[in-house]
Every structure is written in structure tokens, then in C-alpha cells.
Amino acid sequence: MTKYSGLPILLTYLVLIAAGQICARQGAIISDASGYGRYNIFHILSYLFLVARGPLWLFVLKKYELSTAFPVLSTSYILILAASALLFGEAVTIGKGAGAALISAGVMLLVSDKLPSAAEGIKP
Image (tube, helix red, strand yellow):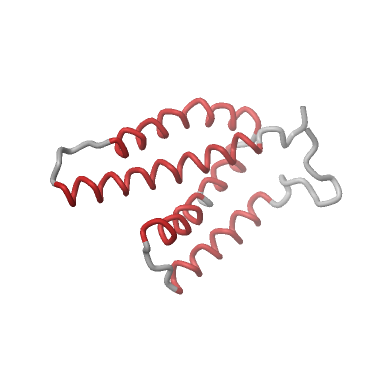
């Protein structure tokens, strides 16, 4: 097992964060529009994604140092920014785009020595 074998799990964790937030937003839209109850299927899905992330995070922490894994979580903002623009028609302003670029640059600086080089690649 290589030092990068936890990468698919970390990426899955990021997708679950984004999916949970998207479901929470859709649930809020539905409950606000209909005035129907507090919870709907999207709220339930949001909580399920939250619960599913728990064991994955423990696995990620076994594979990566906390100082490497935690900053990568901020990239979920970029996923959520893109998804909210595509799914909900939310505006991507210059400020949001610049913020996403800074987050990307910051994460790359923080984890650059931990990522595989192009020559090394990710080995199974």
C-alpha cells in the first residue's frame, strides 16, 4: 500500500461534504416554498451524508497527517461553489472566484510536498 492509497477516500469525503450541503440547500428551498414540515427527503439525505463521512474521516486520518488532510477539506468550498452555480443558479462573483483561486493555491502550497510528483504518479 502506497502513501497515496488514501486519496480516493479523501476525494470521496470531499464529494460527500458537497453532496450533503447541496441536499441541505435543496431541502431548505423545498420546505421554504411549500411550508411543508421541517424535514424532507433532502434534509434526511444531508444527515445521511454527514453520518457516512465519519468513518471515512477516521480512515483518512490513518493515511495522512492532520496538517495535510484538514486543509484539503477547504477545497469542498470550490466544489460547492460550482455545484450551487450549476444546480441553483447562484452567481459566481469575482470575489467568490478569487476566493476559490486563493483556496486552491493555499491548499497546493500546504500539501505540495505530500502529493505525488508527475513522474512518480499514483501507484495502486
